[in-house]
Image (tube, rainbow, N blue to C red; front, side):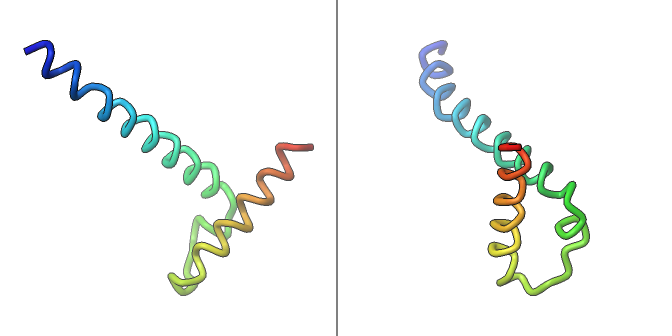
Length: 62
């Protein structure tokens, strides 16, 4: 039984790690008011999120 848990732990752990990173990134982007109350067309979301990510990177770079 421990073999089953060990074999399944790798993919689950990787999935949890990736999911947590994505959720944290979205939470950081939501601190920008433009995403908190996003009411634009869904097709424009990717461009808006990309712009915010660029701004966030500029802020981090100092």
